[in-house]
Amino acid sequence: MRQIRQVRRAFRRKYFALRVKRMTMTLFYPMAAKCPRCEKLFHHVPLDVAAPQLCSDCDRDVEPLTSGICSVCGRKTANGICRECAKGVHSFFAARAYASYDGTAEHLIKALKYQEDFRVLPILQTWICDAYAAHYGYFDMIALVPVPMSIEKERSRGFNLSYELARAVARRFRLPMIEPLLRIAQDKSQTVLHGCERRNAMEHVFRCVDDARSLVGRHPYLLIVDDVLTTGGTADACARRLFEVGAQSVEVLTIAR
Image (cartoon, rainbow, N blue to C red; front, side, top):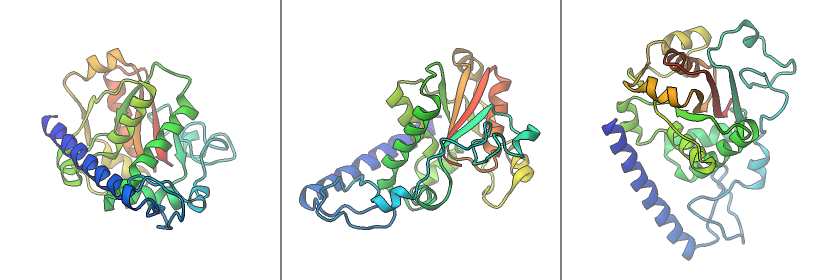
C-alpha cells in the first residue's frame, strides 16, 4: 500500500502541474480550448484549456443509460432483465453505468487510460457523479470500493482511473471510500476474452487485505467503482471477495456499459 500511495502522490503532483500549465495558457490564449473528443476549437468562447467541455455534437453522442436497461447488469434491453442475467450469472446485486461504451464515451476513456489525455478526467468524474446521483443518490449508507490495480500496473500507468472516479464521488457526496481489496496478479489483457473465459481468468486475481473484515464490518453496503463494465468478470470477482468478508450488499457503478 505504501508503494501505491507514492504512485498516487506522484500522480497528484503531475496532474496539478499540468493543470497549472494549461490554466496559464488559458490566461494568454482564452480562445484556444478544444473539444477533447473531436479537437474542434471553441471559437469566441473562453474556456478552461485545462479541462474543456465537450462540443455540442460530441455531447449529443453520449446517451445516458437511465431507462430501458436490465435491472441487474444495466445494459440496454427491452425486457427488464437481459437473457444472461436471467440465468443468475453475476455475484453482485446490480450494476449501473452513465452511458453505453461506444462513440464518445469509449473514445474519452481510452484517451485517458492509454494516451494520458488528462483533459478528459474532469468530464469522466462529472459523469460518474451524475450516474451516482441518478441511481444511488437516495442511499447515503453506502461505501465506495475502487477496483484495485496491481502495484506494477499502477506504477507503470501512473494512476488508477477507478480510484480517481471513486475519489470524485466520495468527495462530492461525502461518502466513505475503503480499499479492502488487493490485486495480487497482473493478469493479461481482458479485452480479448469473453464470458466464462473472462470470469475464470479473474477468479484468483484479487484477495482481501488483512483488515478487510473490519473495514467491511463498518461499511457492509458497498458500491464497486470502475470505468467500464463489459462481461462483469472483474466486478464479480471483487464482489465474491467482499461477500467472503461480510458484505451485505455489493453493487457496481461505472462510466460505461
